Image (cartoon, rainbow, N blue to C red; front, top):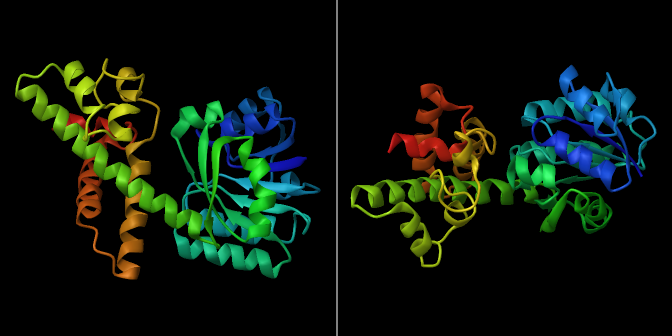
Amino acid sequence: MKIAFIGLGNMGGGMAANLVKAGHSVNAFDLAPAALDRAKENGCETFTTVREAVAGVDAVVSMLPNGKIVDSVYGADVIGHAPTAALLLDCSTIDVDTARKVASAAEAGGYSMVDAPVSGGIAAANGGTLTFMVGGSDEAFARAEPILSAMGKAVIHAGGSGAGQAAKICNNMILGATMIATCEAFAMAEKLGLDLQTFFDISSKASGQSWSMTSYCPVPGVGPQSPADNGYQGGFATALMLKDLTLAMEAAQSVGANVPMGARAAELYAAFDKAGQGGMDFSAIIKTL
């Protein structure tokens, strides 16, 4: 299958490489020359415009920074330029309304489209072990599943257009709040004189267990390898967590949902980002405790 991949950043670069490994022919586009160079090294054919990249393809996959860019790229350079038989898959994390707007425009242009945001971070993107939360019709999901499976370990149909984005922002609101709680617990355990490895051994097998504890421990040298063991570099940047929490707060307001823990997590990550830590992994918020 010939697939255009738009957006080759920390996540998209590894995802495009995994499509090549799965035997697909990948037309890659990014604004950054260095990202295009890496894509070429990974076996992609590179292009300097989106319109060139999407010409004659069977599918278009995008991994872009925000909803405004997704709307612009699809509206100006994908819809009407990719073959109408091509399936469109947006893996960016954006607001539900924009996801539905772009999907409606695609449908009006004769395309099938899914929103398929991911969970798992850079390591999972590189390793092909992402989880995809997919919004779209049953027919579009059936077409998208084999493409997404080449980049992930789980591909789950969440519902109609926008449902993938809804699932992603709800999931990451849990992640943001539980990471802060996990950091608080480790900080308090240390002050109470507990050995942190011992506390991990207990809590990771007790009712305090969560993904933030067992898979992404915020304490260096404790638990499986995580960004904490690399000076809180790599992984999932604080600025990206704040973006997702901001989307969650906007969504909560739009439907009248009461999210006090999510709101407090958003406030704390906003303060951490404002303090100049936006590039640090989100687990580095333990430094504030």
